[in-house]
Image (cartoon, rainbow, N blue to C red; front, side, top):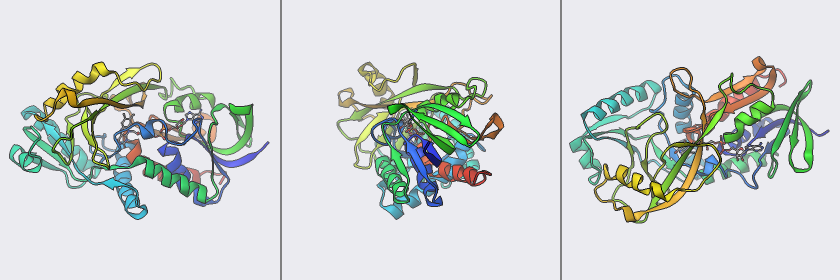
Amino acid sequence: MEKVDITIIGAGVVGLAIGAKLASLNKQMFILEKNTSFGLEASSRNSEVIHSGLHYKTGSLKAKMCVRGNNLLYRLCEKRQIGFNKTGKLIIARDESEMKVIERMKLQGEQNGVEGLEILSKKELNKTEAYVKGFGALWSPSTGIINSHELMNFYVKQFEKEGGIIVYDSEVTNIEPSSRGYILTIKKENYHFLSKIVINAAGLFSDHIASKAGIDIDSEGYRLRYCKGEYFSLRRKLDVSRLIYAVPPDELGLGIHLVIDIAGGMKLGPNSFYIDNIDYRVDTDHKHEFYTTAKDYFDDINEEDLFPDTAGLRSRRKHGDGDGFRDFIIKEESIRGLPNFINLIGIESPGLTAAPAIAEYVASLVLSMPVF
Ligand SMILES: Cc1cc2nc3c(=O)[nH]c(=O)nc-3n(C[C@H](O)[C@H](O)[C@H](O)COP(=O)(O)OP(=O)(O)OC[C@H]3O[C@@H](n4cnc5c(N)ncnc54)[C@H](O)[C@@H]3O)c2cc1C
């Protein structure tokens, strides 16, 4: 049976970032991907925002990885000519009660280590973005946007340059722990091989992978649900140059916001609702909801200018961590009887921003394994 040192399941931005980080260790490595190319799921169906880290509970992995990832991403983009734009973002308060919310958000952001946060009065907001309506705003200068495809392309090249192999069209269907590692089965031709170390970065399906390895995903809080987010693009651009967000309406997401891509294209989204089966269609009946939300912030918007764009699915953990907050799970699973097996579960937003920091963290777990 063929043997390799390290296998990563999933060629999304997280699996690729981990691969690129581990590539220099000079070990035999595979990334297995069920699709015919990399990054076709959550990693290419998102807002491409480099988040600052202000939204996440202080001390959580989400907060730590986002703040670190933000820093690492800007440095990487500059060094490797990956497209980005440090636009900054405004979270708009519509009234006094929302001003109180953004003040609390500023405090949390500062506790998380986010720099440069500022509360803007109505007058200051008008001066900054004349065409945005609001009572005041929270200004986050370290938020920006990135070309996620260029980022993933860079990681692929980095991984392959060091001899790593990405095997496409290779769905992992079975995982059998053995004394020398894990025997992985790939659907195509029912192929088996042995891997000393396994890293589960399978996004929406990472709970299935954990379950195949023998983990009880319900009792461990690993089970995922698909939380859908749709986008509508704007045919006519608004006279705005920064990312515009509402105060998050609920725990499901950050709320419909104005996204500006690298080429200057504009879209609104994503909304948030749970679905049971994978479905990337955008429901045109939701257009009015997008329009009415946006109308609160922009006078200059017409419903006819909105067109269905893409949709993505968040890997949302079914149950929160007691207080409702759902942190990333990134664990080496010796304690669950699976030594040298690392699970990454619930890597929803800010997973794109956090990817380089997650990769650093996973590399530290790998380097501390006795098998190394
Ligand atoms: C609507 C939306 C908006 C978002 N906006 C942002 C944002 O602005 N900023 C931000 O930082 N984050 C954002 N995110 C989050 C971000 O997109 C994700 O956290 C990130 O892409 C997760 O990457 P991943 O590699 O874990 O998952 P994925 O990109 O889903 O990759 C997992 C890969 O594993 C493969 N796979 C699954 N099962 C198997 C198997 N059995 N065998 C082999 N391969 C398998 C899949 O085919 C897939 O390619 C957003 C997400 C969504 C859905």
